[in-house]
Length: 324
Image (cartoon, rainbow, N blue to C red; front, top):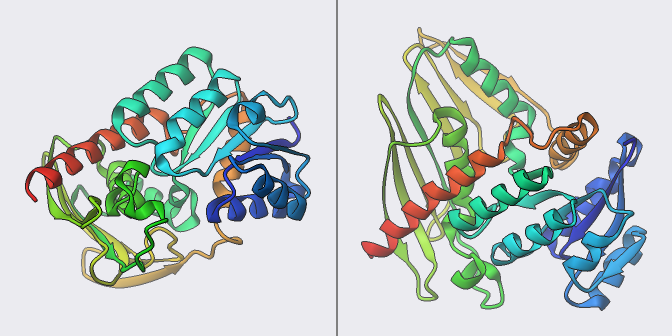
């Protein structure tokens, strides 16, 4: 396919950002074809300002549209699984916002259905596709850090309370872990794989969401220590420590533009890795390349790994709930 025609589910901030990015990349084979929202007037307003071809008041209608090749899902996390199932059932490729689903059971259901129908599905973990993170993978693969022994990462932010925001509603998939901690768990998974043991503690807020999580992931001879908090402030960073050197993703770690690299002698070298536009276009390009090549997954963010990440986060949330 020369042009990937995108449908967007949702009309919130991320939906608008991605739709604008699709428009910006029109000369690279991307086009906005349709938008769906539960409120049709919002879908019409969204489409009118971006010249989308069609509007729908439900996911099923958009998924059935033959002018749509791939669907980007930007609803609250509680709606991800149902929206993905509608699209997969209609044989539409899917790029779904993080967190992939509410829990591992939903993720496994999506993965099984995508495999059965041979449909492309990927979690929109855009950070993995950025130049600095591509360079990080290359550094680790080269062996110059030696065996990775420790991964440390975290960040903190204090959002203004808004009872209408999904972030404060556990039934919609709110909370620090699913909203922001997923970046940390996903990065640790990319570097160390699936943990052998998960330890976690934290704090639950008045609306029932996790407002702070401290996580230790054990990987044999390596460990990851992660934290995320909605109760204080700190720029999110991420550091990988090996036997012969270390690398730091400079903040914000979810959108890094620089790496600090220390060699075995402690000498520091800083690398700059600029991002094109918002940075979201890199994952759009990855989806387009996969579809043009006839692939059902992207090696940078495999579907099975998204399931395992949800399993890890399920264990974290269970322990945080238990000990608070």
